[in-house]
Length: 383
Image (cartoon, rainbow, N blue to C red; front, top):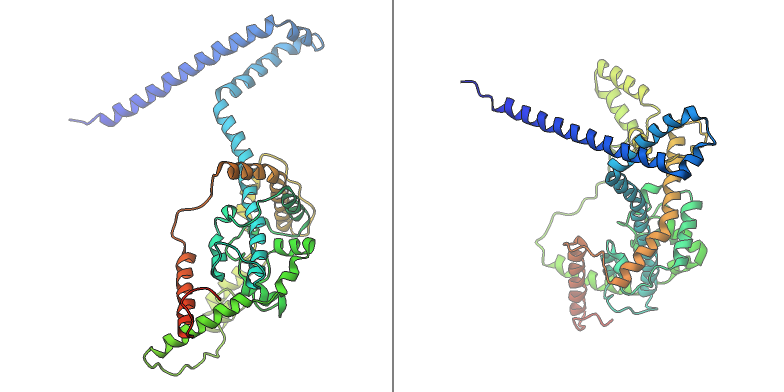
């Protein structure tokens, strides 16, 4: 016997959709009839119509009723999308408040390492890294002010920056690397974030970078003792022979091309040459994906100005980059209000998760304490 279960299910779904469609049509007709009657009976509206060609009034009313019904039918969806659009920029701007606070924390780190200030809750240098994700909840920093916001808005609107990388919080407290680059060769260490440079130019806080790292040097002294003691207890190892051969860069097109031309057959060389020819104007690894960029721009429901450039791809990116920075800057005051409200209500952004920085901090602390003990000092942080 043939199983008609699937057919019955399909027929049931079809019937349900059909009945729903009929119900919606009846509701639409009822509402439009009601609204049409209200228009005809409204004296102010009829007076307004007198200024227009009477042959156009009925067509206008039909169009108006359709527009009103669409706004009515999809009201919840439209309201949600409007709210999402508004909160999207506020949420994006909220992340930038973290950069403001990270600069304050970094300046404090410079002072603390120079032993010019003492801060409750800070015991070792590594403690500054623990606030990577929860910087807005840091209790020993001055809250974000309107002046902070105004300066950051100026930074967003006047600096040559890439919106994609402004709020990368991974490396914002790298004191040793920043100081090495600032006080030495530009090729050494790590460059300061753009916001730090901008802030230093406005405040003169770049002078903090030349303060001595007294605390850091003390901690390193004790850690070195602990490392030396640990090495003494290790079994003998083979003599270290430094590797002097250069690294083979996996991202080098030149190296890949040489490899293909040297070791591959003629067919592969020809195919790779064609590949290079078609992609010779392609983007570098650190540049944008054109397909993603176009998709993002199409999803925006407002005009995005694009200035002339000999490379249309660069023109599109610059336009979208400026669009992102402008909207973020405009919504910073609203994000600041949300931040102040959270502060007042005691709401936090702290994430309850195991942070790798916490485990590294414990190991670092243990090494410092071991070093003090090896140096004949008390096992504490009073130094």
